[in-house]
Length: 169
Image 1 (cartoon, rainbow, N blue to C red):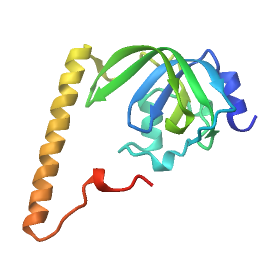
Image 2 (cartoon, helix red, strand yellow; image 1 turned 90 degrees about the vertical axis):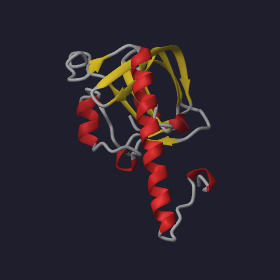
Image 3 (tube, one colour; image 1 turned 90 degrees about the horizontal axis):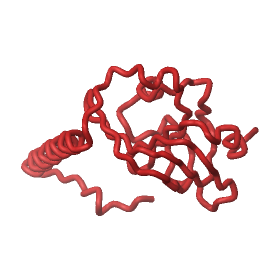
Image 4 (spheres, rainbow, N blue to C red; image 1 turned 30 degrees about the vertical axis):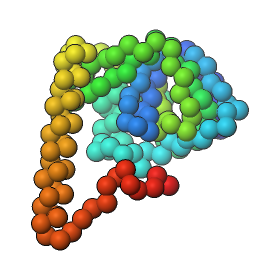
C-alpha cells in the first residue's frame, strides 16, 4: 500500500519516531489520521544528525525490512506508553510521556522497533536526573565552543549570522 495507508498495518506495534526538533519518542502506534492537513517526509539523506542511515537503524534496532525510507507521511500519529529517549554518548535515559499526539509535519523518521533486538544495546541506561545533567553539561560545552568560534571569526573580521535571525524557510 502506498503512502499513509501502509501505516495501518503498523498499528499496535512499537515504533521509534524522530521529531524535527531532534527529540526521540518510542511508543506503541495506536492511531493515525491519514486525512490530516500536515505533511512530513521521511527522507533519511537530509537528517539533521551526524548519523548515517545504517548507524541510525542499528542504534535504534530497527530492521531495514520493516522500514520504508521513501515513505511519504501525511498523517498525524497517536503513540501510547510513550517515552522520550535522551541519549548522550554511551548513556541514555527514558522520560515517560504517556499518550503522545504527533503532527505528521514534525516526523523526520518513523520505524518499527524489532522487539527481539531491543534489549541488545551497548548503551548504559541511567536515571532521568543523570541523563538530563549529562545533556545539560554537553549543551553548555557546545555553547562555549560556539562562542569561542564566533569570537575567533570576529577577530579575523568575519561573522556568522545567528541561527535565530535566519528565516526557517
